[in-house]
Image (cartoon, rainbow, N blue to C red; front, side, top):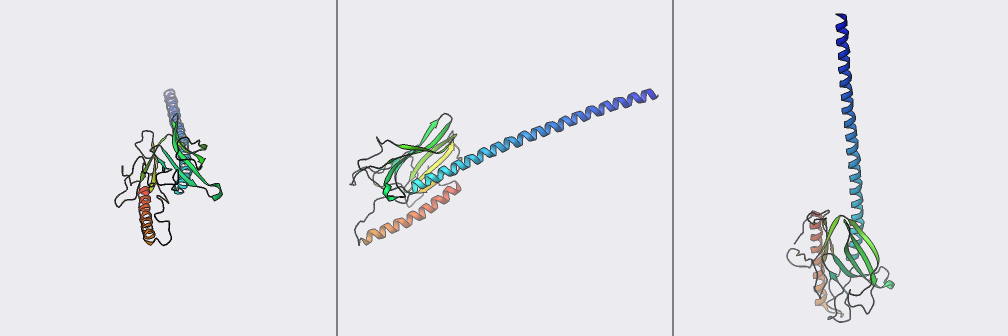
Length: 247
């Protein structure tokens, strides 16, 4: 009787030991899984933070350039070409320097693919009197504004009484667009990575009246500028909402 009781206790102790080992293994596995998930999520958060910082810095540089765009022609007459190029994958414009002694520059911002990533690259060239367009210009000082597994798309809009109509290119020879929009999308160009950035231009056409006392021209220009400010304010609100897409 005593022998059988001892054998039963030994068997029960063995079962207990196996159960403890199994539970310990489950706890250890749970800890390893949690540790892996925390590490993976931390790495993903760090990548997202890095991408946001890259986008913020690049978009601010783009906003600074576009907001400083100047109306310029490749000559002294209205028949000369407008020094502005607007395409879906590139943007060319004239900007003024902070120091007037440095003159004006031609700036080109374009999407360049490199393997799995695409960079938005800014390059520039000094604007010389003999330049009448972007063809043949040697651009230098390339700087990467942003880079990632993204697609970029520029579009352009003109002030109108109705909703903004965005075009994938700008071909007007009379005036600049009132605003430039940049969309940053996934590689398939189906989903926005961030809301579209919309940048109003400060100047979009030649001054309509150069002579002193041209009161009608001044009133027209003031009215146009007021409408442009209201329109630009509405566009920025649409961009913050992720809307405003006229395409």
